[in-house]
Image 1 (cartoon, rainbow, N blue to C red):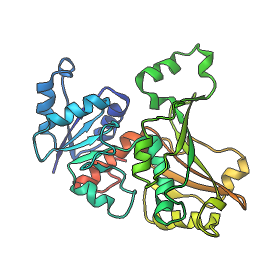
Image 2: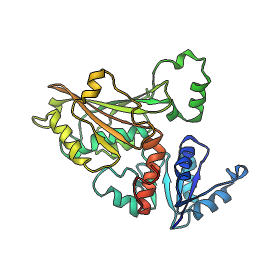
Image 3: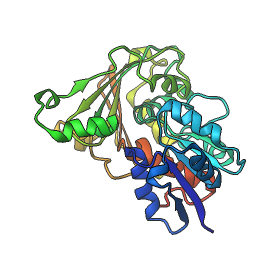
Length: 313
């Protein structure tokens, strides 16, 4: 059986990558809009309603408008924008989030694709909150270093044009403490205290790593690094796209430096626990264009359609 898919916003970074994934598939017919009709609401509505799965790769306002164009109850929307990530009735498109999440994605017709920073943060914190090792009220901080592709076409053009010395060094941003991923970070971890989050963009195309520092004394009674690591091993056992690395990963410690780009061109997330007797750094890395965006959208599509979850990935 062939399924029909349409990407609304097919010229953006996420949309182009979704097309690349789908082009490998013999079971997917990709519906395309003529270049001169990309802003034609009637033509977009026709294609959205003709699709079994429609991906929204649009700014938030446009994504909400596109969702309102869908009247076919059989069309499943997968929204890659921030617009619906905390909206009731929309399944969060992270199958590994918690037991039962795949069933929500399978049954839902409205799926919100997770943010790249948020995916890594949530996969680190949700199991620990669920296990009671991280109190929901704990004030958590996190930093994320990411490649410039996460900034979209304009930022990619800036970096690839060259000649600007200001772009040579890593650049922290989100300094108003109001990054758009924070609401979903709270909603989908169960944290009730807003985390302090600082992302950093570097002079490399893609790759992302989120770091969360913790004091063991702030956690559950007599909590150890082994306890934290054990929770990850138990939660993610059997997950094909999540790899829990050895405690205090010897390969990383031998080099002395963390490779942010080691998951590039995969749909994988690597989870790390580095620790001494009193402190811990939790780290998760992924490809911000793969599991952090387009790969996650295709994975959610596979789950929704009841296909092999890794098909095309």
